[in-house]
Image 1 (cartoon, rainbow, N blue to C red):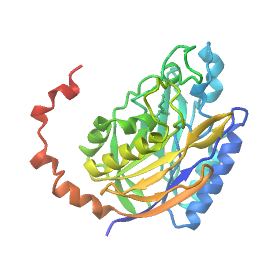
Image 2 (cartoon, rainbow, N blue to C red):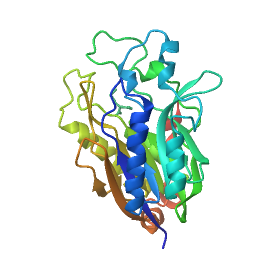
Image 3 (tube, rainbow, N blue to C red):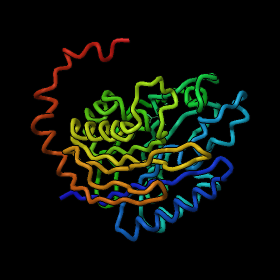
Length: 306
Ligand code: CDT
């Protein structure tokens, strides 16, 4: 059978003043732990190398350049690539990308143990706003710092450990959009790698969102996405208190039945591991979500209408 030992590496907070070497050192330790626990792939969160900087306003984007990677690997990220090779473990990394043309994206890659970037994704559903919003106690400036991703939702069949796996990605807010899951599902995705930074409080709160529903909505979205598209997912948080701003954690690994197989219990660096039998993707795919037999795209025109 096709089995995969999957690790989700939740990261505790990264403070604004901390350099890349702090996060990378912690990530290398998590990779070592993942290796000891038999994992073949480790999934890190969105924007894993720095604090969640879109909460900080910067008028001139040029002054924000230090948050972005211009090359991968770089001196700062080389230890991750070295650890992947040493431990024979693939890794998923979320980071802020600045291209040679000066374009900025909220990006994720899957890196094979050899160091090859096998899959790259740029976040499509950017939440928040572009200009400073004096109404908000905390800014969420993703629309200022990033362009909408231009790669669609690609799926590739790639070696993960011993197994060829159809892998796809989402980044944070994407998980709340069933369209994103379905576009991956239509490509027979088997494993969705998904990092997030989600504040415990909705800073846009106009009084209609109960705080206790924040984690529920995150899990609800991931569990429904996995069930309806017959795939596994690693939903991996950056968690805890970043300079007084709390991110809620609760990283999970979910199976194609929508069940949580493993869940983080701390708001710090924490590795959760699950053995995934990829054969489990067959049941949904051959029965209730056999798209060829049961899907009715002729009735879905509004989904893609502008
Ligand atoms: N990083 C990210 O996409 N976070 C959002 C927060 C939404 S509140 C503006 C999320 O959907 O979790």
